[in-house]
Length: 287
Image 1 (cartoon, rainbow, N blue to C red):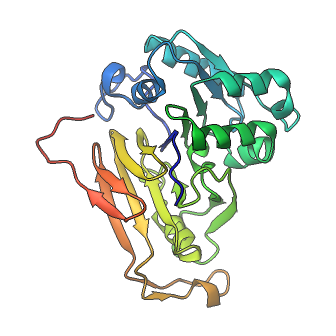
Image 2: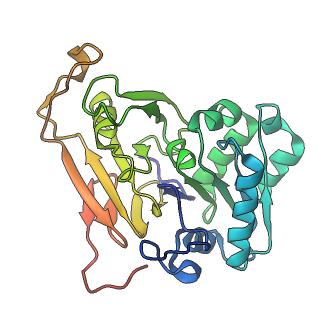
């Protein structure tokens, strides 16, 4: 497995942006929240951050929300790059932004828009090369932006028909971390079944189910640390002793025996290569 020098931060969606009325399920925004960690990993409040709301159906509004959120954290150099076509991904001003920034933040929405408009373009190539080769370069993404980081990308599917073959729709993502399949809004939207089917299709890969306001800091393409207020569910199909996904017809209930599932929370760590969990002691503070 190649050790990439950059940092990925997939987020489960609905991360705290510092405007929550009810803080019961969120963390202190300024020095514990998800976006605080994004800024920290990118080099601090003076780092150059580019927000890409391509996945959203309301990109202007979403871009403004992130400008406001990063401003609350003290950031002074944040730009919204509104890409709506592959042609936009080939514009020189867009290319220059991606070449010079410290962090790219993909918004939520429809992950297929990200791959359709950015996949296999100059911007995609630059993101991939910088992530592989530049220490300190950060690619963050929430919801759709997180799911698009994978190679085998969940594009949709029914949570209500869990564990039925065909409940998950797959598509090719940006391939930044091909060892993973990422799903988001995982707890709130009951997506256990569709992630299970995704791993049944690709048992050599690991599944990440990210709860809302929860993410992973992934360094070296391998070393994962949970951040945020919720949980990350890790699916490991490498020990499956029965998996009938390949022989079933669409709409048929599935069988999977000995799927390994881990439930991780803030500060817990996961080693992708060795498929090993390191759990933070209960008395340890939030990170």
